[in-house]
Image 1 (spheres, rainbow over the protein chains, first blue to last red):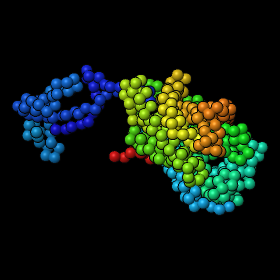
Image 2: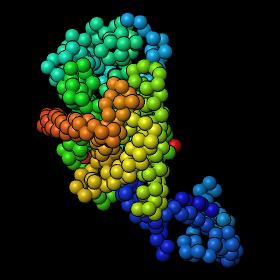
Image 3: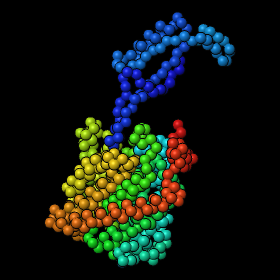
Image 4: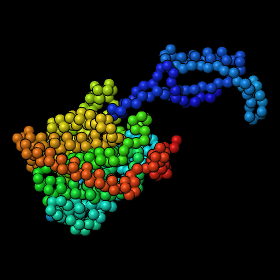
Length: 85
Length: 408
């Protein structure tokens, strides 16, 4: 699992900051991006855990995207496939 | 002449307090710029300690306070501090060594050009800045200090009151800041790129150091320890507190939220405005001056938006506006009962003081603006004022100094 601090926004939009009368519209808000590569039979479990931890029910909670990984190779041993995970 | 140890102690402490204001200003300004310019901005204030000290020792003090030439400038008899020794000079401070008075005044000469740097933050070339500080200290600060404070100075003879530098320090720097912002032009991306302050905790620390140092700035301007120093010390604090509140209340009403930058700016605005009045007014007048200064400067920092110049850190809006208001308020609230060396203001039945204040404000505005304009034009034609566009994009820290403020 990899976690990255990123900036972004979806439907919730940003906020406005004011410094001595100068207004700045801040569109990009700090977000956390998780990247998880899991075997097919454990995807539902991973999704359930993320929802349990990250869902607050408010705009801005974020999204989960599920896409296939074509291949996985461990550099150290050159193993491939599910063995790597 | 007998040296008073209490007076000397207070002036030495005050001198050190005012010295600390320049690094305080460096942090105040440094927090307000973008991260890539933090060191360049801090450096512009800090290097004034070096440049102006040397200038002051060699010619600055003599030009400002030396033997009068026709009310316009001091003679060069005291150049290199020749004859400025341990014996008091009764013209300026009869109970402390002349060198103590010279050092105290030096700290004022140091911070004043540094104040201007707020107007052209994030784009001024460092080499040009050093030349600017030298020329400005010699051609603007020294004559103005002589006119207002020097024995024989023509504004002083006219009856203008400036206890601790409303005219000489704040109006002169605020007006010069306007000339500088107009000549150097806007920062690249001004108006459409985001340029929010990168570290407001640093700015607040700077404002706190300024407030702390201002006790020496105004309290020390009594050039003695005792009742007058206490009175100036007290009015300084009261005005700063009142302006802190009035700024944030106005912006709360106007913008919906009270900001920390507003509180820091309000404090400085109050300190600026009380400076010329601090030794001539009572506590309630100080409260009133502070309340008005916070509100006026809150709107003062928005002037630039109407006229379209980029006074990046609001040197004009705070020091210019606050300084003019303070000088005029001195003409209204000054009381001879509080300081026999002063004069009565408008509310004590003497309109003539307000008139001489107004005249001296106009004179200082005209002189500082014109001479600063000429100095900057000459530097611009010869060595150039501004960093190259790619240096501006890279930031002053790397392009001017080859270092970065933050390496985490």
